[in-house]
Length: 139
Picture (cartoon, rainbow, N blue to C red):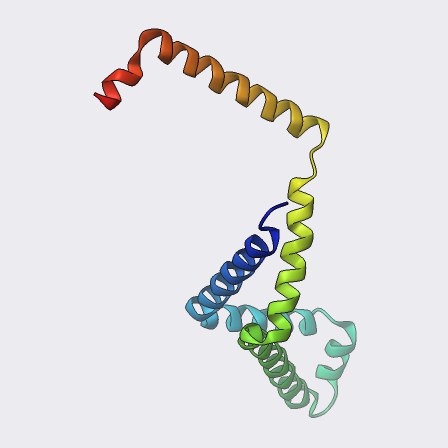
C-alpha cells in the first residue's frame, strides 16, 4: 500500500498524543481508581482478612494497602509518562502497523456492506444527475 509507513507513523503520533492528553486530564481519577482497585482486591483476599485479625494486623494491613496502592500508582504513572520514549513510539508503531493490516483485511461481510454502500452512492449520484441538482451547487 502506498504511503503505509507515513500513515502508520501518523496513527502512532495521534495515539501517543491522545493517550498523553487523556492521562493528563484524568490523572487524579485514574490514581483514585487504582487505589480503590488495590484496596478492594486486598479486602476480598482471605489471607489479607486473616492478617487483619492478628494483633497489630490492622496497622500492618493498612500499611500494606497504602504501600501496594502507591506502587501500582507509580507503575502506571511511569508507564504513561514514558509514552514519549523511543521504545514506546516503536511499540505504538508496531501495534498500529498490525492494526492497519487487520483493517485492510476484507471479509465477506465487510465486502458486501462496501458493495451495497457503493451501489447506494451510485444510485444517489444517478438521481442527482438525472435531476441536474449539481447545477444548483455549482452555478
